[in-house]
Length: 623
Image 1 (cartoon, helix red, strand yellow):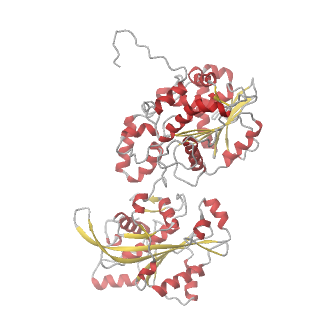
Image 2 (cartoon, rainbow, N blue to C red):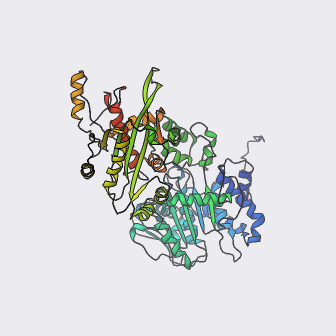
């Protein structure tokens, strides 16, 4: 409806008496853009208004609005353009605050004891949590309230707490009421009238025995484990209506406490333990004490191509997150592939497989295949071995050339290149299987039971089993090369000698700082043919070869959850010249199988006389 300009100041329309329910209705009616899980949360609220009383639930509008008004009436924001202004809640924030503090149980205590909030970076999660903490400190009617800003590390806990301290500094009312302890940094906010306090806490400080009335965990995706959350929830037993608040960006580790909380939250919102791919709302009661606000895109939406979906991950789009800023972020993602996963995760609530994934899941799935390596019995095979200590997996990859295919080069030239089949065997110590499955959050026991992983007796991998497997391969194939890294290789070499196996071996370092010395026969062959002196194997070259094979679909990789987990967890390190190699230090899960595969591919392509490999190119820059 058009607004007639009269010269007088136009007053904004009055806000709803129930902003919580009003926003839920706008979302479900499609008047507000929101993702599937937020839509479900709104449907849940509206359903509970009708059916909640049967379960002893009460919608206390007075309590909801009291908490909502606390923010602009008492709190002041800080930083940049928001310095000193009242904390006026965005409608999506008012919905959350109203839901958390407005729903009550039959005995009058708060219904929700936990809430999980996942949204894009820059949407004000930390100030939002800090405001909740100050409300629970001052206005929650909790005797001797203990409010904690929690993190797995002290520095992490201080980020949220500093926002609370800044709010106190900005507000005359809070400065009069609260006493700060410490300076640079302040470490405690105390309400001497009630004996209550608000302070940071972290698991690395060795804290024990807290009795929190409210515990707030920011950036849960950065928590190394569930220890901090479990520590705080153990202290809830002495409180009538404790509150655990968790806020986070999306993560990259599906074995983390954050992923567990995310999965629970989306099921709570959908009202089903088995949601479909579109997270259609079902409405069953999964957990009546958890409130969930999980921002996400709908299935098959692409934020790099469709700006209309940005608001689903960024409820404060246009307020704290500017459209121009997100447009610049999207341009970065399209121009710099290495930044794509972090941008999807941080700004568009997409759970990725790694912070900087090496390979997309779609590209991998296009080359996975079911086949029996013995289909190639009698052919040449190249092996790559990644030998473990006591913690990693030991992996042995095999690569066989299968034919050729035409590929169009970057300049439009059609070239004929070889194709390959590859598979990976992997071992893990049997005696520590359960312990390491729990620590690594990987289903090693299932993989062993299904035949994808070998578990041999002992606390370390016995390399005689690996040597025996190499012997089996040697009897079925002609081993062309066994690529190895120096680490632990002498022990395997001894085992091969004991089995009487004579195999051509070639050194292949796993990092990106060193290139191996080329074998003498390569040097001699280059001299005879008049070619330039050959270069030895190194991981940046082998990684390029494996990348090309996957992206050009010139390789079939035998389907196995072990190799899938390794490839999807693989992240890279790089030097100033953009040479790249796999990083075991940064990887979410064990990546030894893909390291072994790259070693085998590097050796196979470097010695393939039918085509040039990355090792023949002069444009590779090395230190």
